[in-house]
Image (tube, rainbow, N blue to C red; front, top):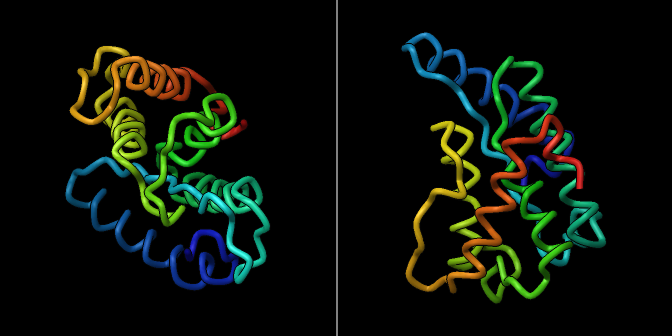
Length: 154
């Protein structure tokens, strides 16, 4: 939840990301930040009435970190936004509205693989538990994200 809470992001998450990024880069690794997704119903306790408001805060945090650290951001949460808006029939969440379903995990993996491995997510294979047409749609969202200069904008 820290990326959705500006003071926690600034005071806890950023120093940790800086330390990890420095250590990774010092060992020859390329750093890519994994933009997480907001809760399906937002988080009233954190002041977010819905997914969109929470995701906006999360995206802002990761993009700020990415700029400050000079690293790429895998815009997973932003792609969830597209999927939720355009294909609300695809359940990305487990029943708790926070954790990913098989479909949400597949979408996340497609975005991360496309971002880190620079592969076309459309070429990814099928997966047990995800219908072929749903997997195709999710791969399409991932492909659109990595092809976009601003994938975090819904």
